[in-house]
Image 1 (cartoon, helix red, strand yellow):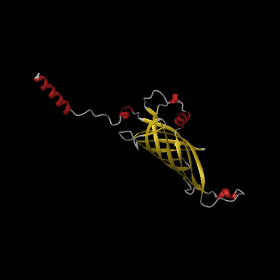
Image 2 (cartoon, rainbow, N blue to C red):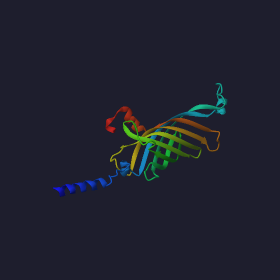
Image 3 (tube, one colour):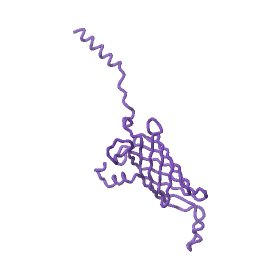
Image 4 (tube, rainbow, N blue to C red):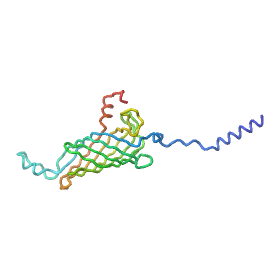
Length: 207
């Protein structure tokens, strides 16, 4: 009996000395696809220079010198790959249709700032997006911050890429390449349209 008690004490001491099992800091990273992509609709409001030629072509009083208000709407798509080992710093191309013109370029995405944000019935994260690009006529840059979350748009849910939803505040600056005096600056919202529609209509079969 005494030997049995001594054996139990020795085993308990060995168990206490053994370090605890270390869990992965980010369980999601073990199954994180290499690529992430998203679509968005953006609506912005801001300023642009007044057009003196337009005032000469109308009988209404000319606009005041300086700036006038303007609206900007766009549809876009992007695709990013991991730039860091954690996958939270990403880089990739983006493309956006604004009215009758198409602009595109590259973007740098920093995810998990902060690590957790709960919106739209999905646990997501904060995201910072920096874009630069243009076309043969205009150069443009964007800075966006908001909410981001993965969503199983297409099954199976584990593959080489995953679809991301979210909503972000975005500031956009655009100017003509040949004439820097021709510019516009807007602040607005960009949101992933399919996920937003699912949330607004409460279509549970899409969750």
